[in-house]
Length: 309
Image (cartoon, rainbow, N blue to C red; front, top):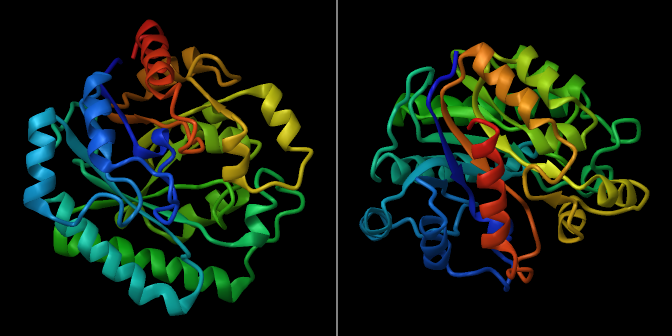
């Protein structure tokens, strides 16, 4: 059964992934262009990109008729010495997003937005093995236990203090990327504590079929990201020793409908499982490659509209 879905976007479409990058656009420009492109909402982006100033951000969102559908933890979840920093980020991000204009809740949406997406990141040994399940080292028992405890602590803080649903995002180049790791994290973090944010592009990049994974984890997928992959560029970068975001700078992510992912099949599946709520378009890029952003977003939106979204 078709449920209502709102298509949103994220600052990574403007190349915003690392707040230390000197080439990032101003956050006000991202809001201007997201609104001009017709989106009803967007993600907060990485910690520190939008200011933690509720009044200022609320005013900007209201002027643009936008809402924030998710905040983001995108950091090292493995190192025990980073846990206090992550909990501080969780506190500050959740305090901000619950004070902003509220996203609507749709029929078929299990948990109200905004969500808190939780992603592991920051490990060279995994970044250079992105997409290569056969050569990517897995965490040992102790490292995995520490990561799970950190995720549980983040999710419990978000839920208990702010009523925010944490969703674990398997991310290329992190320690939750491949099918075995997704299966393991789902078993170790209960559904009452956190859901999943499944990302079609990250799943495909890591060797999985997004349709199969969305079906397999349909009871845990509370929120979804859409991307597409340029098969030619993907074939090239998979034969290189390359970091994930360097592959993105080469154009491995492309407008939706111009890549290898089967979106008509995904539309059918989401109708079959009754998914309603939010889907966020993402297309990671180098922030210096700004010329095609609005054209790419328009192409993605147009394709999804024709595909029934």
